Image (cartoon, rainbow, N blue to C red; front, side, top):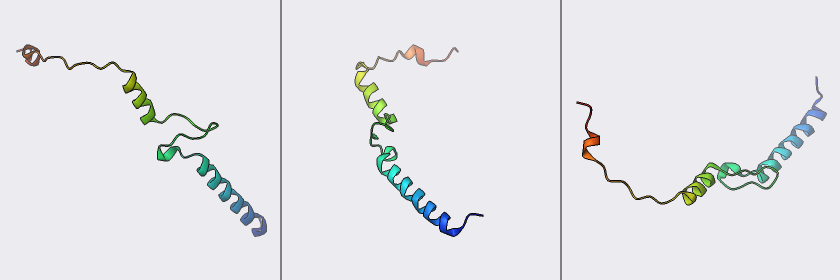
Length: 70
């Protein structure tokens, strides 16, 4: 069994390390993380894809295509 004199300082150190990691890894709130952790969020990917996509006019709907096979 691990003595309390060892466990509680290790638990406190682990808690501080997790808090420090959370302060440099803000991916959950939509912000881009610093270099070693960062990757683009889904929203950033979608915004870039929408900016690259050509703007198309909606095509006119042919009423004959809306009818079924019968």
